[in-house]
Each structure stands twice: as C-alpha cells, then as structure tokens.
Length: 635
Image (tube, rainbow, N blue to C red):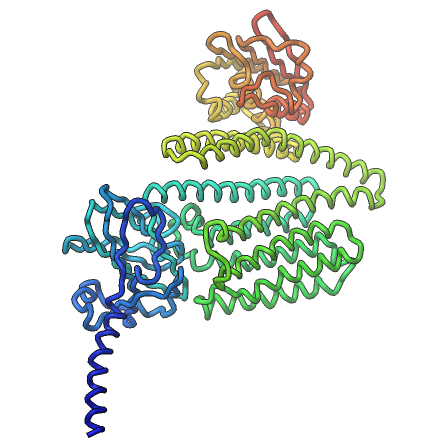
C-alpha cells in the first residue's frame, strides 16, 4: 500500500515538475518594451533567448516550425556577452520587441564584436518573415547595407506594433558576442563621436610616424626607425581590433581579418625589443640581454609559423606576447637603477602601458564595468606611451650632445642637424598649434550639441582644419626632401617643364590667370636638376596665386628666358606691392604677409632653398602697382 502511494506521489510530482521545466525554458522570456525613453538597451538575461543548433544546418523555417517541439530557446544568463565556442554549431538568438510609445520608433540592433564570420537577421512581423543579407568578416565590407565598423541591423516599428527578431551567428573560432539595442539618433551621435576620437587617435599615430621618419633621416638613427615600425604596427593592431581596418583599409580583402591581428602583435613586440635594445644601448652596458631578446624573437617567429600553419583558430597568445613588454619594463628599470637618466622615460612609458593591460584584463575577467571609456583605455595608454617614447628620443639627442666627447667637425655637424631639428619642431608646433586648438574647440561644441545638422557643420569645420594640417605637414616634408636632394643635372626642355608646372593641381585651377612667355627659343635644351627647378617655379607661382592680395582680378605674367649662360625667370603680377622692409623677411619660414590660412611662409622658403641649391640669385623689384620676382640661374 505504501509502495503504491509512493508511486502515485512520484507520478504527480513528475506531472507538476515537467511543465515547470518547460516554462523555465520557454515561458520566462520578456518582451522588450520601446517607450522612447531608453536610448540604449543591453540584451541579456530574460530579454534574450539562445538556441544552439549543433548541426549548423537548420533553417529559419525549421526553427519556426519546431518551436517548443525540438527547438527550445533558453533565456541567457545575466551577463553582457556570450561565447560562441563550437565552430560547427549555429547560434540562434531570439528577441521579442513591442513599441509601447505613441510614436514610430527607429532602432539599431548592434554587435560590438565585428570579428564574427556570419550574422544573419530574420524579422517576423504580422506573420511575415523578412530575411536580410549575411554580414560579417567572411563577406566584403562594401556589401553591408549600413557601412559601420560594427555589425548592425536597422528596423522601425509603428505604435503598438510587435515583432520578433531571430539572429543567426556562425564563427570558425571561439569569440564573444555582445548585443545591444540603440535608438537611431543615439546610435548616430555615439558613432560620430566614436569615429571622431578614433580619427584623432590614428591621426596622432600618423603624425608621430611622419615626425620620426624625418628625424631618423636627419640623424640616421636606427632607434628612430625601430620606433617608427613599432608605432606603425601598434596602429595596425588597433585597426584590426576595433574594425576600422576592415572598414577603411582592407575592406575588399576580408581574408586579412584572419591575419592582421596575429601579424601586427608579432611585429609590434619584435620592434619593441629592437627599439628597447637600441635606445637603452644594452649591447654596451648589458651585453647578455640583447641575446635574450634575439632568442625570444627566434622562438616567437617559430611559434608564429606553427600558429599560422596548424592552429589558425588561436588568435590570442596573451601569455607569450606580454613577455616582451615585461622584458622592456625590467630592462628600463635596471638601466635606471644603474644611473642612466634617459631610462626614466622608458620606465614611465612602460608603466603606463602595463597599467592599460591590467585594466584590460580586469574587463576580460568581468572585474570592471565594460563601456566605451574602459574599452578604449588601452588605446589611450598606448598613445601616452608613444608620446613619452617620442620625448625620450628627443632627450636622447640632447643627452649625447652634453655627455659625449666628439671631434670639432662631428660636433659642428651635429649642431647643424640639431638646429634644423629645432627649426623643424618650432615650425611644426607653430603651424599645428592653431589648427589643433580649432579642432579641440569645435569638438567640444560638437559634443555639447545634440542637433545632427550642427554636428555635421562642426565635422565640416574639423575637415577643413584637418586639410590645413595636412597642407602644413606636406610643406614641411617638402622642405626636408629638398634639403636632402642631391643635384642631378639632366637635359631639359623649357616647354615640357612649364607644361608640367602648369598642370600642378594648385596652379591648374588658376591657369587662365597666367600668361606664359618662353624665349630664346622654346625648344632649347639645357642641363639642370628637373625636380628642384620644378619645385622652384611651382612654389613661386603658388605663392603669388594664393598668398598675395589683389585689389582687382588677379593676373600673372611669367617670362622664362634660356640662353647659353643662364636661365632667367621673371614673375610679374598686379597684386598690392610687398613693402620693401619685408623683402628680406619674405623668405623666412615663419613670415606671413597676412592672417590668411592659405598664406604659408613655407612657399617662399622653398623657393629660396631651391635657388640656393641651384647656385642662383633671387631679387625683388617694387613698382607702384606690384612686386616683380627675378630669378637667375647661371650654367
């Protein structure tokens, strides 16, 4: 009797528990309510359900047909991201959404992680199924409907309308997924800010690279070039990490997504060790450490080859790639402890970077809140480290000047190079400070403004200022190229040379304002350096076309005369005459006649450099209405 009662109660318990299990699987999902008051909704817990198709072959039709039969969607755990572990499985996410507001709602469903092979959206609304094209790193970027670095899907809903969105994800390698809903206006504002600050970050990296290439060319220093390559691969690493590389650099070569991250980390660590060795002069003071560095590079190269051939699914070798940074940190500490004063820069830079790694690890292990600020903390730390390293290189030059005994001739050569570098740095800071302040000011206005039209205007202002920065950098680079250029005389035809000059983009748009005369005769051949002569005439014309003030319509006359003894260029115009007291200062790199943004002192400075290179002479003659430029180059 007792046994029968036990069986009876057991049957009742099973009948009660089984429905509860089904309810826990499919009954506790929440519908997301869109009220227009929540611009950012993280999908997790009961508002996001997950089903793993271990076969990886089931279609949306099968999923819909077999709901609650063989297909069970389970509410996800209370966490912000999920791991796609099985490369064979397809992972299906389900989201129910209802518009409880009185207005039409426009939202974006977004995945922060762009490194997902395939992501496909299915939308069910009013018993109708809408299927989108697959997006992800397995497909060319240009095929995306919304050209954004993250994986996004846009949808809209009428008041009171409901819809269910299924998201199918598939990936060859283990990777996390973070899904959020964003109001369209919030998404646009956030994206503009994110792209802008990433633009500043990558722009800073580019400027650091350019400055150190020029400094390395002046000083013929290996340390500068190692640093340039280190910074370049740091930039490549972040391009591969945040999706900007796939968006702007290798959009049509999606296969590079598999290799850019691994290769950039490898080369970044290699050049960090080479730069550390060169900067701290370890070969002289600690000869054992360079051998350890080279040994690590050989071992790491072997690991990379094995990784690429046999284990391409392993993207992160965290415990191996952190070793070079710790080695560089220890060597900088050892060098500082033994009295090398410049190592303090290296020590500070390494400390900042390692602090960034620590914060990044805290995020990975969910010990720190994940948001846009903590996500990009490693970017900021890398940028600060690169700036500190840049100052270290500058201080290194000064240190060796003070502490190294050198011959008079070598000392004079170094002093000349230092003077050129000081002029270069002063000119760079002088010409870049204004535009940078403008960019920062407009950025602050853009961040405060919530009006999209105003933000667009601010972005246009930033673009104009950025073009100004680009013009300054090009002019400075041109000066250094001309200084380093060796004279190479070749046979030239004046007509062909002048045709090339007039086709210069900055001159061509004003070609109808220029009257060219070539005498004695146009077809005469002469020997001179074509590059220097081209730069001379081009910059002379650009200066008159852009920098001078014209009371009326501008008109230029260019007379070129070739004979057996000389090459003469006479440029006349109808601009306001340049005061004679400014004639000497006109060729100074810092001199400007006006506050016009296009008025660069570099144009006439380049003219002077070219004339000196060609052993020529330049003179200015004033008349009542204009200033005439006369350049004579003797053969």
